[in-house]
Length: 179
Ligand code: HEM
Image 1 (cartoon, helix red, strand yellow):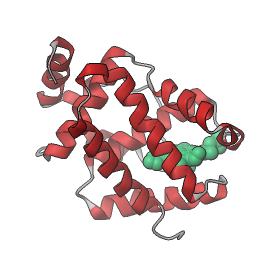
Image 2: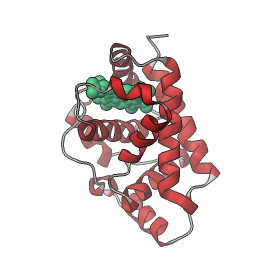
Image 3: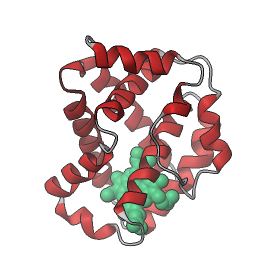
Image 4: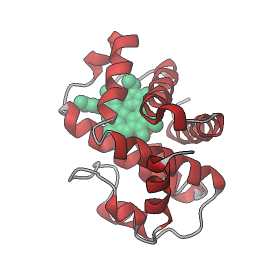
């Protein structure tokens, strides 16, 4: 990360209340209690992987607070069949739920019990939504591509590797009981 924006992102993350300042919209995903969301501001020691994930996500939000929209734009452009699966939630609400779940999961990447409690039921729900295993790859690609696009020159191979590994872990737990 090389420039002023990156510096701002790092400063926010290195503050003890860093995530309290993130630009999440109101509301929480129904699979995550508010206490889990509030836990975001209390997590202390972070791994290098978490640092890379957080600084890139924060940078993307600083540059474009609505950047999760880009994620869905990429997904629907490359895989139009996924559009029809999103029936109940407005895309605005959906963006918020996905963002909050991702951030919470990133905060608990080393907490297997937390991941299992929150993500395995979510994975079962996704079977009911009609989500297939290959779609997880599509979503992973769209997620990484959208963050990379907004981070532009500040995006590095290390960020890409951190996101790939984190997404793989999240997906693994979501799909644990569904094959
Ligand atoms: C990291 C992986 C993913 C995370 C963290 C995630 C997160 C979420 C969350 C929090 C919800 C809100 C509803 C609920 O709590 O059940 C949701 C709904 C949904 N997700 Fe995901 N999701 C992921 C992967 C996927 C994939 C691969 C697809 C495939 C296209 C997908 C499609 C959907 C659909 C169709 C809904 C329901 C929307 C509606 O009813 O309008 N998700 N997801």
